[in-house]
Image 1: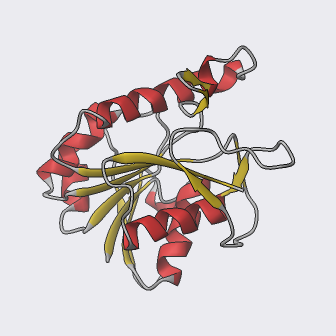
Image 2: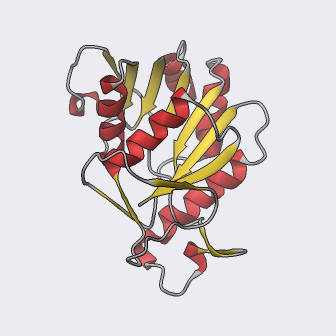
Length: 203
């Protein structure tokens, strides 16, 4: 598979890059600062800004799937979706956030009083992006939300999948490592089960 990865130099993007290479895929690694991405076999590094639709469309052309691993405070669906369509790519996977996950029917994590104020802009942007995708019928999109704590860790390959509800372990913790998140995302791209849907991953 040829994968165009936006935000390839970030905490999550770099793990997705590693996981995709581990599985033998070819990548177009996209970042605003291409110098942050090491030259590796199977990786074509491209400098592009998501807000430059023409440059982004040119960068992702020919890919089988686009993975968006950028911050929702830097760009939204209105920036990304037209460029993906213009490039002729049908499959889009988005690294989502946990804020839009439900802790009770109809009640999202972002709407709780305990939700950290410093994460509100990013979480709200993620919810807006998801809502935009839910009206999208042309692209075969998938939105993968992590658990509440999304941190560096180990690649275990052992985790649970859910849909719109926040996953919480028996220990009361809701968390997933960047590494296992990448495993879940690549599993989905190789064997799609959540097309035009959001799902979540956690321990």
